[in-house]
Image 1 (cartoon, rainbow, N blue to C red):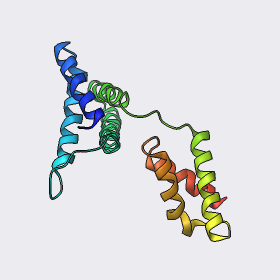
Image 2: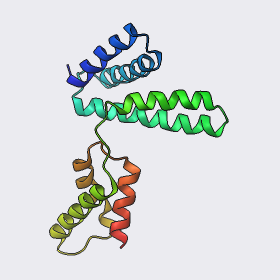
Image 3: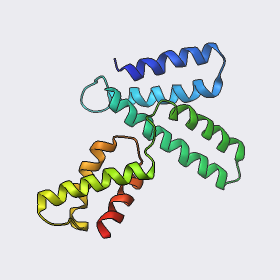
Image 4: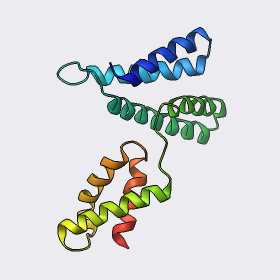
Amino acid sequence: MAELKTRLQSDLTAAIKGRETVTAGALRMALTAVTTEEVSGKSARELTDDEVVKVLTREAKKRKEAAEAFANAGRDEKAEQERAELAVLESYLPAQLDDAELAAIVDAAVAEVAGQLGEQPGQRQMGQVMKIVNAQVAGRAEGGRVAGAVKAKLSS
């Protein structure tokens, strides 16, 4: 079993015993999402820690979007609950890259693609650059943020 999934389960047990309802609720939803991912497809399988992180990232994104929607609708209490669940999930995710670290990774990827092509890559080679960057970022930055940084670098 993935080490992260085991940690989620033991933390859920501790949260239930400690009557921490927000933490327990967030961990229950996260574990449900992990289990759903394990049984999706043709056959059931164990997820690796990297796959569990991807599921947790997806769940965190859902919480963030729900909090914004509730806040825009004037339901501040529900928005605050979603933010609290988001904070619980973020404690299990790797630290996010800051802009300088992301820019350095993008610069290295653009240089690598330029070396392969023999010329400076343009917008047409964005997919090649994104493939290299996403392999190095691996859940430490949102996809939209990565795509924006790559697009800005390629258009300059």
